[in-house]
Image (cartoon, rainbow, N blue to C red; front, side):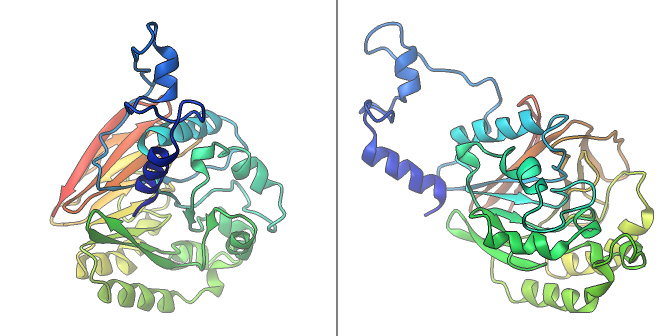
Length: 336
């Protein structure tokens, strides 16, 4: 039973108007309060788009490139994430790197944990597991502290630099493989003064682990999550993508991975290169976006800040790209 179904069950058990839950007819307290006539409910329409969420599905958010100490769009987008979760019941959140700009964190007691994360994503509906990975900005600081914060925060979850998680997709299974991309890229490995931890990681060991994890899974759906894109339109160094295509793309193709999710570029991009069966999704920044234009294989792109809502079912995985004003810019469904 996923978190959303569990909460709905609790609501059904404990709901009374006195407790602020649902009434016997299934109408929320908020709707009843808005009714102008006794016993007549007037639905309250949220000021944002609500994606269609099938009953037997798992919902999770994809966020990245967040850390701006609440400035720019970070605070309102964080509030939108919480408000939307009240409606769709997110089960967990994927934080795909660069939670902390610009120099990572110094320790688990660094004040940036408060100003970039805890005090910003404070909505009750965001008190979920945040499955995180390191981005390049974390690699400018103490990357071990990002892992160790798992012992400090109830919701921060990064058990190792790369790890896997199997979730429900209706009655099927979905494998999420979280990888550590900065040590896979020579640009970071070759600059120990700026990224001291990158060259200390064993690239070949991680690649063997990815191979073993993907080959050993019987999950119907396979999704890999990293910070850096394999394909994207960006002025950033082409060497980043060429290294990702050299080391990661062959494994995605070999094991029939359905989607590769990432951040880093600070805009939305959905790319499916010619001849590829993988859907490549670049999630936008949760605070400060950048311009983007279409390239070969682009199915959608947008320069707006926001986040992604993922919905996993038996035979479908859907993503909805939502901007900071609560508008769904683009939706895509992969079937199997």
